[in-house]
Length: 211
Image (tube, rainbow, N blue to C red; front, side, top):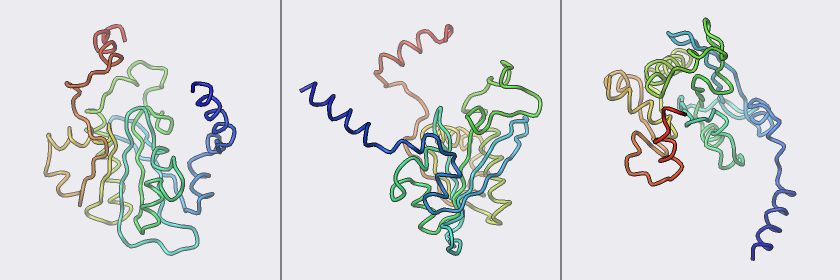
């Protein structure tokens, strides 16, 4: 049985299309028939964040359903929303349905490794958590989308850490988001992990000072 599974895995690997690994975000969008734009914003504490916009399909009028902002999860990037076939990747599905799709990138990921004062080689560059992202990254990117689109309220979808940022900031200032978001969707929402039974996470937690 193990040999059968090994053979099947080898055959899948040989036939799988892994060419997207070497393609940029822009290339993947264009090759799947979508317009794409790059934008940059700077937070109050100096982090320069790259955002992507997918306003619709190439050679078709832009949809009229308004802006949708997508925020990725832990150790991830905006790539997460286009990492599937064109008929299943959330960003492509939403853009094809007529939404003006905006994708955020949190500080420190591969698209957002700049700061006007700090270098990634500086320890202080990495001194942040999802609360910091909720205080700075999320509001900065949401305000930028509102400014660029002219919409008073935008739709929000977050995955994992993308929900933690939102939940944290909602707890601090619910009215701010009520004035700016028409709807908030939480995929894989997480705020605390008290009931997790992962031995790996237990080991990391017990060794937090060392880590």
